[in-house]
Figure 1 (cartoon, rainbow, N blue to C red):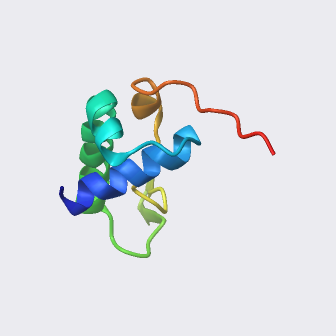
Figure 2 (cartoon, helix red, strand yellow):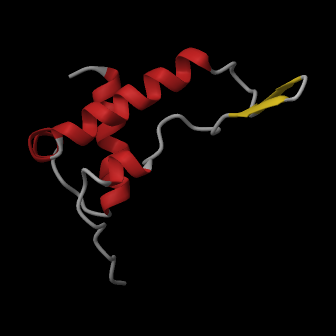
Length: 86
């Protein structure tokens, strides 16, 4: 298992609020894992570390501070998160 897969699994596990095994997440939500890795790789490739926004002339670009976040395209591939009961 690659480092990127482990990061994606951790992010998905935290989003779902359920302690699922790594293999279960890879099996059930493989498309979401792949999409999350792809999104993070694209953002890390263009992002300058430590910079959240950039302006040049009339153009402004803002980056999310964490490339390993659940975006709407990843949410569409996952079930609704579980509610934690105290």
